[in-house]
Length: 387
Image 1: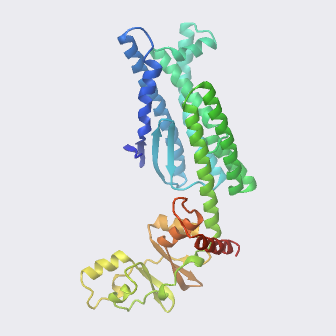
Image 2: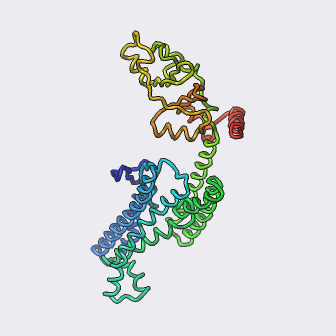
């Protein structure tokens, strides 16, 4: 289900998921029967809508806290999506340093702590002026359809956001702090696995509690926690596998590249593609497919590869990991890297090659494969890991 974009804050796109629309009937169900008469019920519904809008505004600020902290460490944040069960910030990378992950994880709850601390003086002042009994009088104010009740409810909502997110249920914020602590001791992959198991166990507990309380929200959150914990564990495991693979094992020789003095038409052998430009075995440039097609469209008479090649050479060493090379490709917005060994050209690693490696490490269960062909690929990858 495609989310609707609401705009951008600090280059972070804010989206709202279609499931957010379920909030409206939920408000009518919870506040539509309060009071007596149509006017009173309408006022209660308006109170509910304002409260929900403010709570989700706090959720958005929570996710912005994560996002801005991540951006401080050079991690790009694609977007923040608000749905019926909360908000999610989608980042380009998962922080690998435990300290960085802890700071990013705690930045969200810190925002909510600042909000409820800011509301606390108002609550205390109202309690003193109204002579409220502690703590019962303060708790009952949450259910009051009034401006004071709105402030009380918003205060307690932020307290609950902090307490819930600090549960050690990965991938909640507390679970990420747990994962970071475990990673510092036992390593990233084992730490993530333990944190994911703890998160799924707590998710089961939330689901049972939700069924006992007869509320659909907790089972939905539990399902989200369980699914995302498993997905992130798979992502970290896949990242670890790609870190162990050397890019030189997957580079294509591609006939040794093409020489600068060759005519442009010679570059079309085997079809238009990104190709390394080499001179005596050393990489001197890249001839990009789109540049080649544009040059040929304008007429290739008398023109050579040197006339249109990109001389800003960015190479990868044969011993670089597939993961690191892919990250560099993404950062530099390049579709291919020439691979060298001791300064000599050894092949080219393209985005298509990365996709090939990725699919073999994380095959889709919906895509049928030849069992013998897949087994051969897995065996090849396993041999590569042990080198």
